[in-house]
Length: 484
Image (cartoon, rainbow, N blue to C red):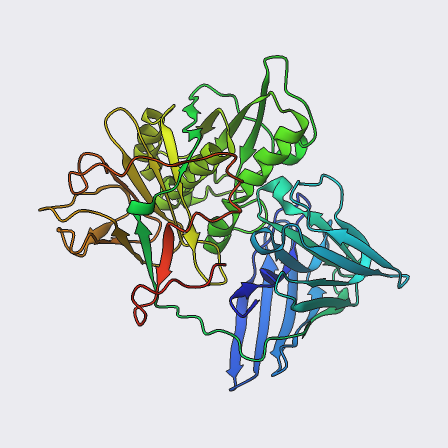
């Protein structure tokens, strides 16, 4: 959910967890949408069934002209099973809300202040409340209220998600869920101080990278450690010091809570916050991120096929990029065999190379669909473009001198070049879903080296924009959009 190009709530969803905390995904039998000019109504019916759980639910989502959104759910257990939690969840995205203060209204109607903290908290961010209120950086007031349940909120960055999760368990008899038991709840989102005229969002904008203004960071690409044994989730090491060998190691995965493709795109940035938090407790530690994985810590009968697909390759490239800009020393992975193999080998050869960070500056209310970086091994600068989405993305690479031809090496997925020559210093690269392209910028892409790097010291962990990757409207060539 977003207002005026700013994300206010990342997601509201209904979740059924089995006895091992795995999320049992719904199969929808009803999905009806009624869309009006200034309102909408969605009716849902679904069943969450596995060999460990069986729960059905009906939902209604309504949106009014004043910005109010209500999500009501009635659920029913279809069998006896064990579950630690069933109910609505509200995700608050870290990209927009880090550093923002909030108030909660407790079940006793006391008001308690809190903060979406930059550092990852191992303790609950808030507890035993029914309403959470905050104001965005632009002054918009946002309130979420739950009826039918008490609410706690945790910092999901501990588990690889780039969000805080407010969860509201339905009033069942946990952990033993009795067949036939029913419960209901409603979450209501209300707004205040809404802008009179929200800026329009052009979903057809084109991404652009201006290499002539490339940012450079005083960071290097981390080393690949193929022998690392692997570590636990970050929650298990949060606040601890380095081991006897001076190393602090943990795993990084995007799907510990939800398995959809949007979650993969959203959660890459959580790694930087994990490393920043670890540095505060263990400033001298050598940090190893291992394994970078799409596996989950649950017992499942089937292996996720994306582990061998392009999704694994792009997640690996994006994660190593985050590890580089955050100062990790090394990484390992269990991804593959498949598309991730070529990316892993290429990244391993970049170990120790200077890394320039290219960030996306845009007004769209979602995480950057494409991430980019430039590494500079001895063989020449390499420009990497990674499409984190399930949709094709077009990227204009700018700041190139006009020469005869361009060349890109596709490490995962497919794509194409709009024109093999740089017209007015621009080449268009079409990125297929979850594709990774490495262009040897110093030797092969237009056979020209990138401009010398301009060092930026103390680069923050993905928060400050370098404004080198911009989103350009097809109807406003050359006009820079408002920063996120």
